[in-house]
Length: 162
Image (cartoon, rainbow, N blue to C red):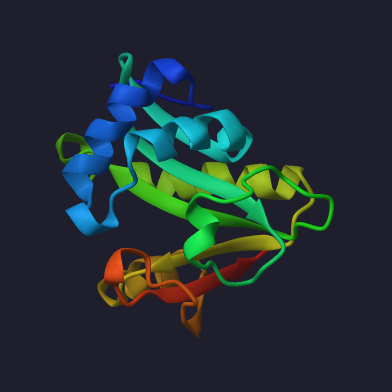
């Protein structure tokens, strides 16, 4: 099994949607239109894990000046700005067929390297409470309850400084 890490293209849309639908509850999912916007605006801070031409996983990032995400972080004003300090992780998902192989950890490492290369201060993300230990294991600290209620869900903000 050869894993290639690369930026997304429009050709990845179906694979990204498949991973999203297989990993997230309906209220957590982004729409197809939102994915098209993300590919068009945040490909430089998004990484696909490709196995034999298949989207096996993805980490979707966008730059931001805020240290916590909010509802607008997922769809508004996605282009990088000069005062942006962080890469906000909008989603990390690995297809169920490929879970347990360390792909999520490798995707985080890929995005961390991109963050360092661009000179940004760190990574931020929102997650459900049950995922806090996973991200703490990868060096993230809990900031507190998020400013987002995306999908009507209680989210927790986490941050990792570079």
